[in-house]
Image (tube, rainbow, N blue to C red):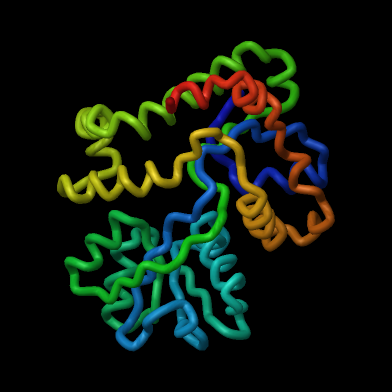
Length: 255
């Protein structure tokens, strides 16, 4: 009935078939795979021209993000850069970069720590607006029949974000007890950088940004050009978040 994903792949069903999918809240509006691991001599994104860049799958969200990021920076697939489907795990791609099989790949915060320990050339690059993380997704049919439940869910989401952002030690204790094996932290340093990276990107008020919607829709259009003229805002209904925001509840949490 309610899930926390499907970032780019519901625009086509909505646009082409009228299926009643809807996003009702968004916790993160930044791309977080913004560490470039590259061969020696590459110092930034502009140096990727005429190079081979690997990701896990350029039809997945993570791979499409890199396609969009390079496009924004003037590098078009096929013309300026070769995009190669590589290994699923970031560190496996890092090793292939270091061996010379690929020129570059992109990884997240924890993986870049591990890459540095291997001796890789790691460069932190600018991020970009992007719909990532928890996107509360459902259907208009469900929302219309369960309005009270939806309101309570979004209040709980707002409270959870506040807890995460303001109670670091308690959050890290939860990581230690419940999540360490899932995300496979290898050290306290990895746990710390994971927390810091997540905390910075969490929206106190779970609205999407215009830039994030623009970029996620670009991914959807790349996968299905027939939806180019669809208005991506038709997939979003933020009035429940606005109700909570207008009540002053979120602002009071952070006073």
